[in-house]
Amino acid sequence: MIQAAHRLSRLASASALALTLAAPLGLAPIFATPAQAFLFGGGGRIVYDPRNHAENILSAARALEQINNQITQLQNEAQMLMNQARNLASLPYSSLQALQQNVDRTRQLLSEAQNIAFDVAQIDQIFQQDYANIPMAAPEAQLLADARSRWENTVGGLQDALRVQAGVVGNLDGQRAELSALVGESQSAVGALQATQAGNQLLALQSQQIADLIAVVAANGRASALVEAERSAAAEQGRVQRERFLTPGAGYQPGNARMFNN
Image (cartoon, rainbow, N blue to C red):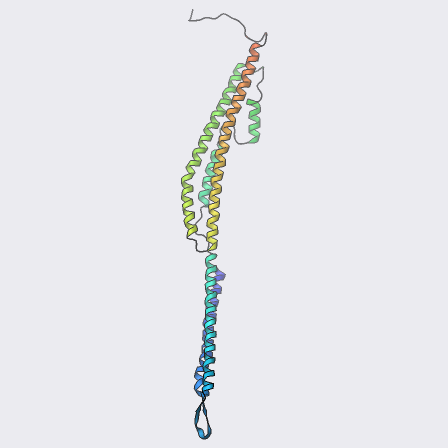
């Protein structure tokens, strides 16, 4: 913009100089017309030459036309520089901070996942410990503790999914306000750069909405996976307990029972 303003100032100075220099050239034939059109004849008489007069008028008209063409050219160049300056004007509005805050809130909710985080190494370790390996020799107290741990993981996953959904819904009001502001800035853009920057920020808003959608899908998928994993582990634990119950010598042992405090 500084270079454009500098060029505009130089063109204005050149225009003024051209007018100053061209004015005497255009007026010179006019002032010279009487001296050249009226000639001295024999005996000191003044003789009018109409052809010379006409040529002087034509010369003055051509000079004036050239000056007008130069002025028009300078005006066009000045308008072109003004248009370039508008095209280079930056958009005075930015939604980056608001979009970044929305992304940070969603990321914070995902990082607060209970019991089993969104971490591959931790998922492998916990699944190997609580879901995939149910030993036959584990005491009943250990089996109950593992079952409760799996239940807590499932409930925590469902709660995390609900929290992420609530956070994404909470971002909608801010996204709606940013969308309205960016559309207004785009419609009132004075140049190509402002329109492009407004379009880029609209794309950033759309990307943030897609990121929220991915977060919701991930949280819901995690909760569903934990429900299925708990169901599979419960089925395996039931099989182990049934096998232990039916194993001879280590299964059910009869004994005396007391009922109704008698």
